[in-house]
Length: 314
Image 1 (cartoon, helix red, strand yellow):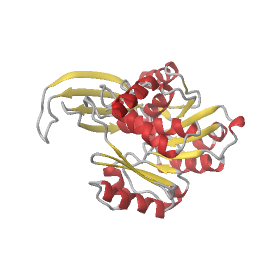
Image 2 (image 1 turned 60 degrees about the vertical axis):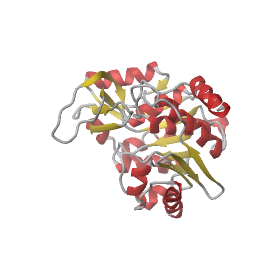
Image 3 (image 1 turned 30 degrees about the vertical axis):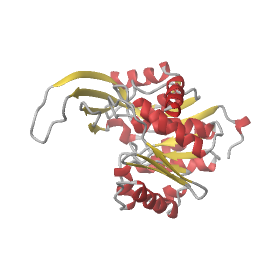
């Protein structure tokens, strides 16, 4: 691992940034139907930007690398990152594509549907990532998702591992991945649907989550935390741990995975073990679901710690 005396960033997030347009209503529309919603929210989003903000709210020193358009929405997203304490000077602007957009629908139970127009997110190249190698080398943890072109993700993982950083991959949106990328990843965190795409294993309980995790470890990942109905299974060569889903009043599940990934990265950057990091991340994800909005609802450290204490007391 990297000598912490030579770095000044806990986490570098390389990923997507979008403008989110969210409607919350009683039910989600079926194909061909229209339903009324009760709440509307416009705000910053994108898994990369969400995770950067999530890590900053948990007290980490964070930088973000991604690409937005030269439009007003792109400017607003970068300003929002700065206001949250995220170093975003390395983020790029794309004149030939608009800033990404996500249309989010959430029902009364917190279930969601999302459609995105990636725009400038899909213009970040592997060469542009390589030109940010000095930024990546300053990080203890490099946190990645799949909202960018795969060559850019592969370059970031390769550079992060070569620099001695811990590489964490949130493999969303779901897609198949090459073995070369998995071998550069220290921790991969798919949900059930993503795990099925990656491994061919249908994840519907802890046992099937273990089979999916074993597949990912055989193919090169250092450790896997696989989401399943009712919780998350952590699997590594040294440990196996089932993390049951916490009982909270769910308002909006959008961004729960981002809260998990951000909290995991922050703990690992602080030198805390994987078991502790996964437990903390599990609580952070639950806390996020109690608030509306993917980025707006990301928790702060004191909220996560309070929920952890109350959960232990129960």
